[in-house]
Length: 148
Length: 83
Image 1 (spheres, one colour):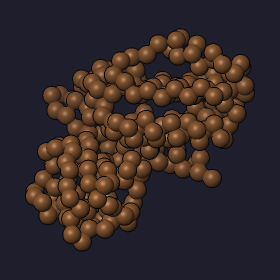
Image 2: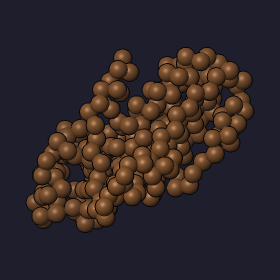
Image 3: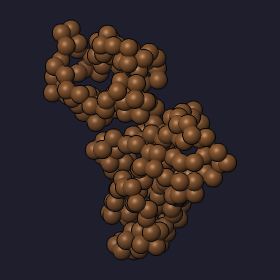
Image 4: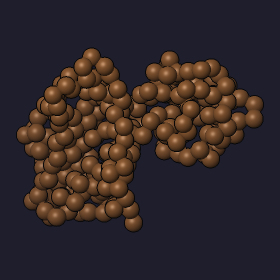
């Protein structure tokens, strides 16, 4: 199985990532999700911090967990860190499988996991002031539905 | 021990990383937090609400009752907000 996990400051190319993800295993289905910085009126930037080492290890572990639950041929997760502007892409989760439903479900599972367990933190700058984004209980609830 | 602090814990404590000998009487994460709170107002503020702090021991999510040892990497951070 192809597993590619990257934490990086630079943007990514969807076409290149999907091409790399489908290079092996003859998947018939690719599902992907991209998250973007919202274009809210007073939001000037979003700065993301992570825990080098643990973040990559946690995401890789969860990609393997997804592969044990669904018949996948590949997983790509790219999460950006550093300073991002409204409209910028933050995250890509792309999942390849021989089955459509597996690709959709595994993609959603991985996003729910990223939101609740991968060590990233967002700091917003609004009107010249910075504050850390608070975690949301709804994200924990979304993750809980996957627990066996 | 190698201690790491992220996000607002780093800002309140004033550093992102420090090395510390295992303090006497510290066996668990909860013990370590109690010790850190005694080190100054920045630490006390960072750990004022235990419920808002998460911990990883050797890069694995852990609880307050997790054991800590002299050669561990212990990270403190707020609930995560990525994705």
